[in-house]
Length: 151
Image (cartoon, rainbow, N blue to C red; front, side, top):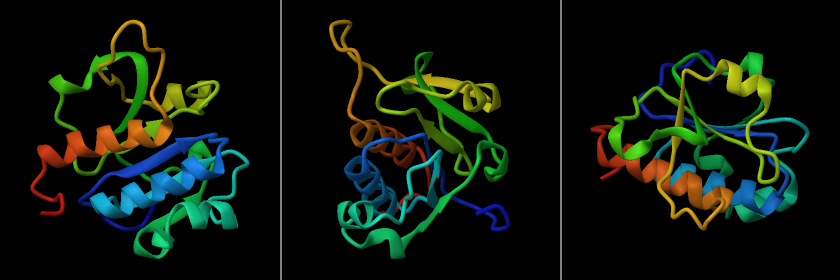
């Protein structure tokens, strides 16, 4: 991912904890034609449970584990409840779309690397969405505004 020019986003999962969620994200990323999925932290994105959750689509997109300082180049849009409403933004095709841990959100290191914080719309009584749901909503928003999204 670091050496390849991209015309679609890379999904970054910052310290994910749930193997099934990580697999569901790989499946979403492959379906939307994302350039790849990167995990930071200790979760192995090639763990058998993640591969099962991804329905074998690890082979339809790039899947890697990297440190935050090894992430590919490109503008980093980090999902955070305090960010700008995604509905007012056009996400660039070469963006890194970063999602925090299911329990603790974005790490300080990734937050510091972010070019922009972005939020998903939700009612005040709701504290968060499932990780895969957040990724799906974000990739759908990107695809609605991109010529590079799958038809």
